[in-house]
Image 1 (spheres, helix red, strand yellow):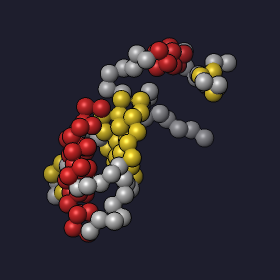
Image 2 (cartoon, one colour):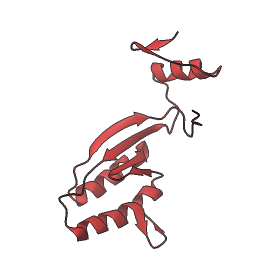
Image 3 (spheres, helix red, strand yellow):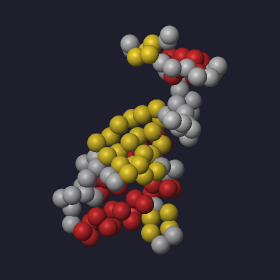
Image 4 (cartoon, one colour):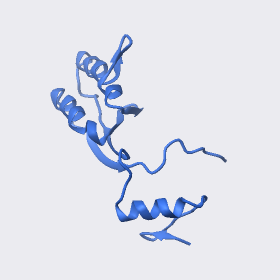
Length: 116
């Protein structure tokens, strides 16, 4: 059984081992690095919350910064943006004086079919 840092890895497909090895070695495919921003608007005025939300997510059919950068909303108070969009979205958070918790993550595979 393959283990990574003591964690057993379950490999279901033939190419899973190569994919895991590439990730471990650091040769990550282009476009798979993302930043996850988690934030709270709890202490902000209602007008600020609305302005921030409209600029981030868009309004009346217009795309917000998140869509223009190729990011997505993960849930209330959390968004994910590609590495290329990090600086632009950081400027938006700075402009509204919102201090997010930021994680840099690597996406190995997207749209994995979940089965019980």
